Image (cartoon, rainbow, N blue to C red):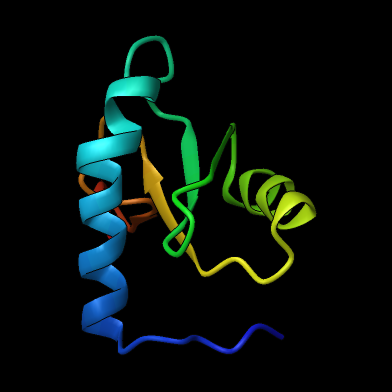
Length: 86
């Protein structure tokens, strides 16, 4: 189990900032709906069809990654109920 190094607020802030400034321009085209897992300490990322595959791919390269996940082209990663995004 990986221990988080940041508060929830700082974790989210760093994840969103890295995605917006570094990762998004590289992955947005042609990957709509896919998941990107980002290590908020290194900026390394992995794109895959689902959260598990993206996270496992990133953890293979960075075993201690602090992972922030984003669904490309959406405001949230998962749906809850009838179209509610989390």
